[in-house]
Length: 300
Image (cartoon, rainbow, N blue to C red; front, side, top):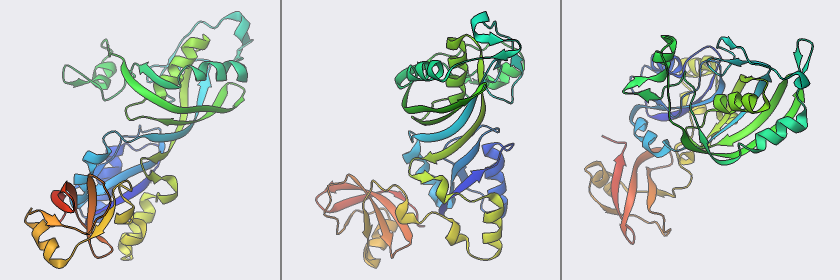
């Protein structure tokens, strides 16, 4: 089965858990995802199936959008609600009895510091590797985790409201950005500690929550023989690339990796080539004029 499927990941499952479930449901061994979601997080998890796993290379730098909640008052060792609390010293001016008090203006002021191109240190409980070992494995053993800051871009980070010690937000960020780190760093700058209490991903590249289906819905669609209804239409994948329909003769040439002339009048460097409306044959690169070389082929 070749295709792109957007799953609405439930809380409590790892991204790999979801991949394994889809493998069983679709009876397809080749399944990958286009960006890990933490177990606590929910929302958009795009999966590529069959020969469409070859599309993953085009999404390595895909931007992501989120909605979520930050809880102030204490940090955690994982920077989210799944971790163990880490004590912080709360300034007297920010506390009322056992409650931590932060103002919406203060939270928005600090949030503004995280917009744009920033240096961010990944969480110790992350898949970032230290000498070939994932950081989370070292963190679980209580070993020291020292990760270097990386450059990320936060295109949007809006605090939508504050209720008690919890602020809800909306964000649009570059690949590799950790919202957990933003929450943790905000708590540190405010002097009260904070962690990510909930996170829902609403988009990855062109895939958004409106296209997402649950694992149960995908299972039902497979059993009822209507899997195509819940998959992303191939012509909607990589929308920045023009779509071209090839003749049977050209499809055969593409199958053997030969260059072909295609009826494309755009100046795009890469195009999507189809046989009919639904079958994505390849991604082809322009050689000159309307002569293209197949680069990623999806047919045998």
